[in-house]
Length: 148
Image (cartoon, rainbow, N blue to C red; front, side, top):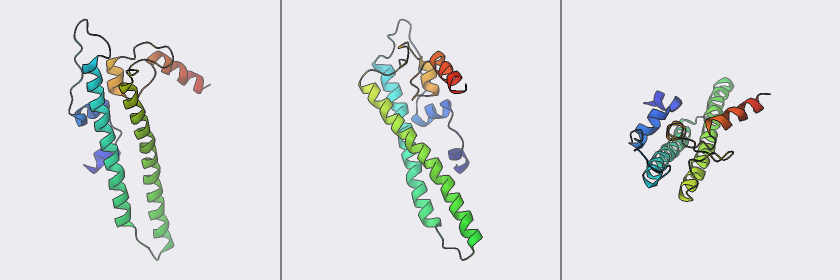
């Protein structure tokens, strides 16, 4: 179980963690209707809760593992391990803020549309990365600009 928490979470495990199946679009269904918004709210809240639990568990683990080693090398190794864990948790805190921002967009009915060109991002892309705010084309262009 512990190895699973260290691996990057795939979109399928995000869905299964939330206890939902991939959304089945119905013919002539309005994009980002109430059923779709509920679907993504469940995914985001489950993801948020999972990250919060990991942060709490890390704090408790670090407190229980903290030892004042007499050997400076052992002490340095423990500090380095703690620093790596804390950097990982800092990234997760940023992700939690992004999840909270996305949940706010859902409440405002502004979820699912590209912030750059205002087209539909798409159900499958949102299931793969529920916090995304750009369509695939705008994201590709942003990455090309970034790498220049």
